[in-house]
Image (cartoon, rainbow, N blue to C red; front, top):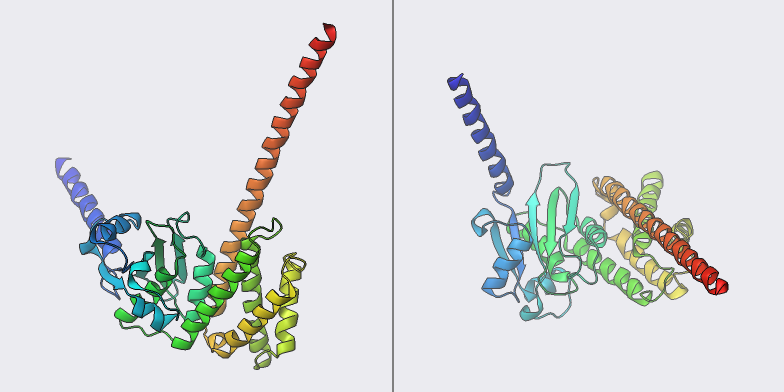
Length: 311
């Protein structure tokens, strides 16, 4: 019995050590890559690592994101001191897909997880698990740069044109989001779903006909997607034209020829649908609570009026 217990204990220890090893060591990249903004001090690099659930920097390959990287990957004119958002990128086996989690949504002010994922799919990112975080409130663009840099430092080259189109997508979506920030009818989750719907329709058309969509085709696809998600009266003509310009560049980038894109978009569509459903459930629950509160307010007011009339 004692021997059996010892064997079981050894087995559990071995399992524990194997589990720990797979958390730290990846078969293809060796270690997960921790890409962090150049604006972080040494202590802030450690603090950000803890946000990303990195127990020790020896367990990862740390890489600094520089302003030069951002200019090269996605354009713009940043400076090193302005880069704070960071990411932990773990390479997975082929077919894993693309999973992005923003661990500090309160500090990533302009990019949702779905928008990161949309842009990354466009850029050709696949088969990775990514966690994003920042100790300061930032737009979140340096983390996107970091994702691209993680691939480069591990010897996997992404298409530069597709990376630029991914950035164009973020800018187009962010501009529309900002312009509708005060519009109560606008829902960023539904708009994310519109973007996915348009991409899927463009991919289906290319697969069916072997041709890229014409400008008229793209305009019809955009309008159909907006109508499907009841956003046709929310997105104005200028914004529709911006989408039209973007999607013309999008299909010219070659992204529609990538075999994994349709599956990634399906995965993302399911994810966004779940988020929309959760938001609806929360709204309904909130509405029910408001109704209950209103019931008791009216009840107490009736009781007060009853006793006042008795007096």
